[in-house]
Length: 167
Image (cartoon, rainbow, N blue to C red; front, side, top):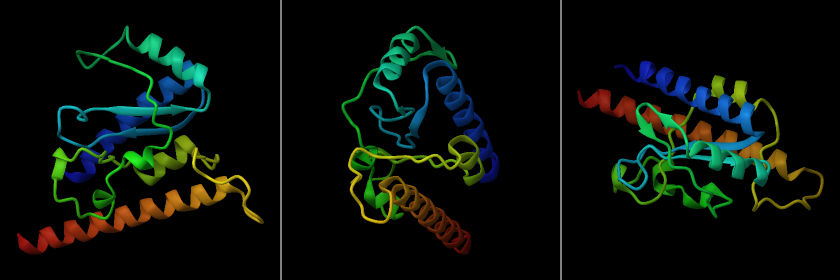
């Protein structure tokens, strides 16, 4: 399977899960899928709902569901800012621990899917200051996330180019 086909397959999975959860339980602020290989992170999907009651309802209902022949194990997480749980080295394309790293390696979705699902709604984090002068905190978060995704895409492309050079 080519990288492009794999990304399309992943985007389809991500969109199916995102749309179903948002339609049934409420607005999603953030959804992350781990790309790690370690048993405690492989296949994990983290969803942050805008409303805590919606998250509780989702957990209660999802624990009675199956996906791809496997039971879903849903639980509430005390983590409010997923950026703290992400591997900074992986984001820079330099994680030496690989897929067995204990920090989250997030699988990115395509830009077109991100725009379609999240649109231009303001994604906030629990750590974002709300008292910024002249600029809303949500706008800074959106810009930072967009820039981070661009950097990840550039790093991925550099690695692909480097790997092609070695072949």
